[in-house]
Image (cartoon, rainbow, N blue to C red; front, side, top):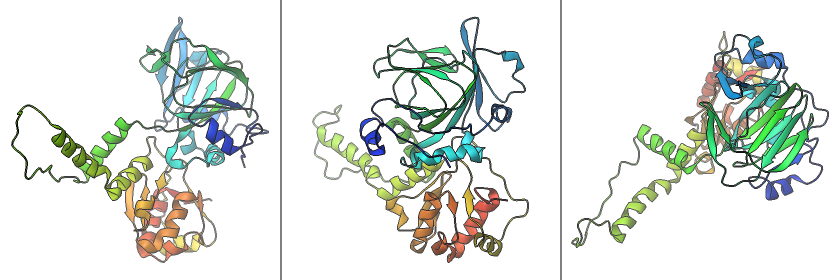
Length: 381
């Protein structure tokens, strides 16, 4: 089992002084590191249509990027290229284990585990990410330069590559297997491979207010909510027909604010929005579906395992009603199922004991069967 080691400071110190504030190198964050997937298996994933992958390289000193699926890699040669594969934790149970050491950050903030394999001289160029990332060095060595946050000009080095101008590094270091580089959003960085190497990047989403407002608007439209009209009874006679005066401005703000003040509405939006995956899941539907009795009997003997990358959450505002959000959908099972729903979202492996309150509810058992038959949760062979 992977365990995060912090030799120079505590986890509390990291969260208080580094998280979302400044980058830091964590030497030997994972001791005795062994790659969680081989380069050949990673390349195999990049050949699959459902897996997001890209190849980044230079040709005649110009940056190039190609998107998978790929048929072969021989034409790229032995130097200067990087294969990047997204959401490998969705496809590899071994890679999914890398998420567990970072459980001090809630999963609604998690994005995915991206893995890159690079040959000497490979990299994706200097760039700025809009998410937090823990870059865990696998086999091989890679040199990383990280600049300070600031006004950095960004430009399209290629249609698929947004780069930034050269920067003065505040970190210039070589990562060895087991080392971790944490980088918050907004800090320019550039990694260049010194020898054949693997990097395992655990990324955490950062959503803009614009993104969330757009998502909230989609939610209220899809659910046919917030249809009440702005009202202004007892309005005084207008003196300036072309003006939105301070009283009207306050009415407009209050009308919009009434949506945000509706805790159930916003909870349903947040649960659905953040539980929806942006990348495909490796769902293995059962050839012979289980019925409720078979599910419960099997659960008494072995746990149900959550498939890699599946997102499911509960919120305090709606949990009391037995509400849970799974892969973007809202499900309601009633207040007596609360303990089971907490276990469903908190635990990667579900035992009979953990789900006991829900297993008394036929609706919960029926839905758990549907999830299991579809591959959202599974019993290990």
